[in-house]
Length: 241
Length: 219
Image (tube, rainbow over all chains, first blue to last red; front, side):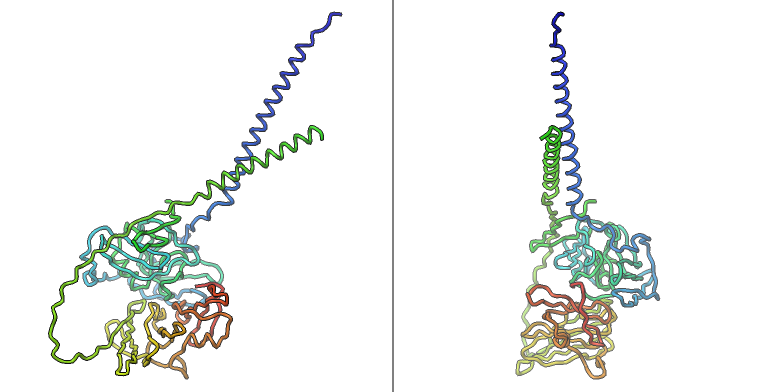
């Protein structure tokens, strides 16, 4: 019997092994790539910085942010009943000339310093108002550069849970600058210069009224983590709009 | 070791290496320090001081009391502190409340001190304008004195109460530090330091019951 040539068979085996090896490498590479991507995604999710709250008043921000004047309705704050100030539907305008405001010119800009708990309002280079405020204690006041998008002479704000639950009618002189985060008067506490809000910027009613009558929809609001001695507004983790 | 075992070990090692690389890459990207925004505030206008014209003094000047005042948060009331320096160099502090239009003046507290000064804090008025707290600056630190805004006694037996004294009587392990303001119409917020000198819990002083309540949150 002629000797059978085994070479083609051998070559077939080698080719099979070669194919098998390259397939194995391909499988291993795919496995490596998929695992690495999965690990990347999982780590990114678990180590992601907590995003800033998008809502200051957990209940009222889900209903509506419209004007509501409720002069004879008591509210609740810190487990106590609070009585709102009487708000006139058409608030009389303060004589801005008396305050020396009407003579100022230029762009209007409001700066809030979270570290010192102060608010400063400028028109051009003239300082219109500087006062203590109370910013976010239960939710952080978002840092960044915003514009007043809505002005309401009064509205209802509600939120919080358990002992921290609050429901406040007639919150006066509201100027929303980001979602339902706003500058407004606070009649239920007098602890300005210290954090005391759910993310809004609380002011004395008398200061809020002055600011409300001066500011316009579109006035720029910069919330700064700190304002340095050289008048630099530092925003470490500003909201990306 | 069988071939199957070898493949399993290789797979596990490959899995660990690739997972590690993925995680390290994610951590590297995630922990890049964010670049803070910096915005310049407007440069304030400064007004040149007009040159003062000296005027001759014809009569010996009568010392005028120095006054400072603080408007209530709703803008309807005014608390004024007048300080007069006496011949013995002690200061007499007189606190009066009025309506914003200067009507209905009431004297709410008067004291003469040589070693201690007094001042009006920013958050002096309770939100309902019923109470006032004043700061007495002693060598041991600031103390808060609570009075009624209409000049009436705070309780049947007391004209005023000292938040620091009430806190000491409570005998907590924490040290009274300061009174910051009003949490509500009748609740005064007091901050403390703990024994290891770190920030201690905050307390409420309820007026007029004088109850001191420890809080779970720090103000």
